[in-house]
Picture 1 (cartoon, rainbow, N blue to C red):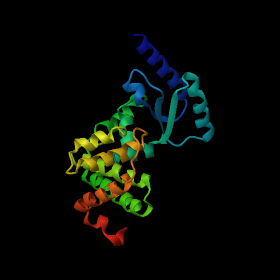
Picture 2 (cartoon, rainbow, N blue to C red):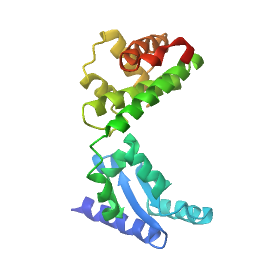
Picture 3 (cartoon, rainbow, N blue to C red):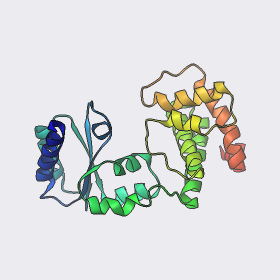
Picture 4 (cartoon, helix red, strand yellow):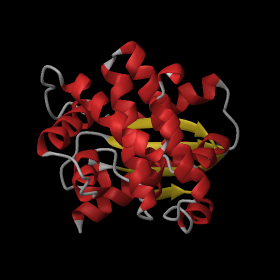
Length: 230
């Protein structure tokens, strides 16, 4: 009971701080909602329009007085709705959180959040191809990571579901049961999870993964690996 009371007190205090602003929604999400122990209280504050910088500064200064672990992210309704519509995993994860303000606003998007359209599915394949082409030129880890990330999201959408947890890309990869050898699966997993600081890369991982991605993308988009496109 004490935990419930503490949570409600926290919510009420945050409401008081946000109550006088043009806030369409405020959502607590992540480890605070999902686990008994947490390091941060992640909150997304969706504004009707991007507020004056001094107003945002006021909120940033007031929230730590409620709890020093509160970590706010400010977005406009336009940004929020665009990202939900394209299945951005971060925003889909936010939709699963606790609405402090704007539960009715959020419900408008929750019903459709798990049904990716064919247009969105193709869009994520295109994102992966673009990142792959960039990575082939830059040979940069981050570009390789982005190519893998978007391809996993594309493949999960092909199965009819969005990726909703950015911390489980390695799990999604293995759920897909791709026709790849264990060495390639492990290398892609390291690329995906190194970004989160969960694993260390091994020498040659990026090169191996780019070679693997080349074959995977060529099967789905023959133009993806044409030399004149890279």
